[in-house]
Image (cartoon, rainbow, N blue to C red; front, side, top):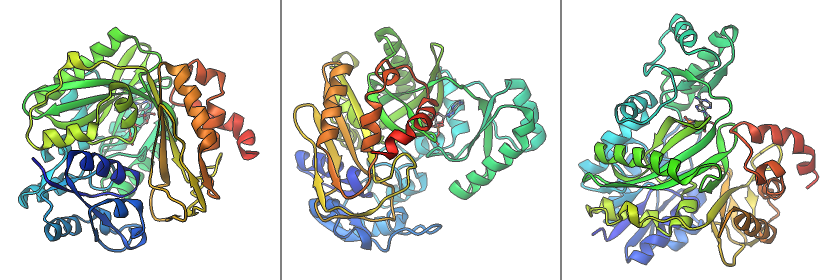
Length: 456
Ligand code: ADP
């Protein structure tokens, strides 16, 4: 069994991982940059190592430096690394280098990360395993002529996507042939700048889908289960803001069918660890878009309804244990919703770092607040603006919403602007309450309700 884990991350996810390690009796090592020396993950870990200055655009320092992380493992005698999400969590080279140094990566093999990290090979693999995919050829588009002919075959609207894509970047929707050339070059440029890889592909644009993702867990020994789905349809600029489980518009039979297809695919691949198979769900059909080979930001909603600690399961399978959960043992209970509390102004989403004078975390039955804030902490401007995740769990969706509203009222992050007022308004909306929305709904809602948010 693993006895010490270095957490190659920061923020709320580092704390979340440390908590499980403590419960399992595993020693923890935090890494941090010079601006993060007073961060809560550094205080909570058993040991901490400074790995340099914060990231600046274009450099691969600190949390993105493979050599710095491996050196920190060697200095502290850590034989396992948990990558969290983001940073090096889906970097196959990192995993290969850890393997070379005899350090266990808490996650899948480098082979599976590579396979799923490229969206074209991911689609090809999933199709081969019987998972339904968005219509479009599984090949990169190398010229404008090819883009034209493929788009005509698929039929407009189409979407140009970066094969190395992530975080909603490198994606352009094309409604007619007149816009194709510009979108093609635009996506290529964005992909090159964001991922160092200009490769793009084309697929059908599904204008009214919902984003539904299946949580899977495999042991790399041919056993796998699914833990139902999460609905992440509430998005802005292809980025999730609110997630819930179960999906309010899916019935049990459909859930078990798509979940079964996913767990079978994972078992056949020999996949080890947690993973998320993401779909667009449109007119009763699922269309695979990508697989994330790591823990997701929104994993707590699944933990809430299944009563399972996903980080504990990750550590168990990474230690070589066979899966000890059977599909028939997994029974979901109630409804859970997560909202992302970002240090941003609303409705324009401008990052708002700075010193937190007063922080008060909501609590009570069915409320979980995963945050690294404390009174006097300064949110640095160098990183993602996520400062907390507020999660509610109730017997049904109505009760989960009521709890979340109550918890949002309790939250104090003074004087920093956060996205909390947005959710207070959203949770009152009649279309939201009736689950009548698609992936583009929130952007329209923000235009209509922007003034109300400004006055907040
Ligand atoms: P990323 O890896 O950048 O997060 P994804 O492939 O997961 O990109 O897509 C992110 C979001 O972009 C989806 O949740 C959806 O809102 C939108 N999207 C992606 N592909 C399509 C498509 N074919 N049709 C419509 N929307 C899409």
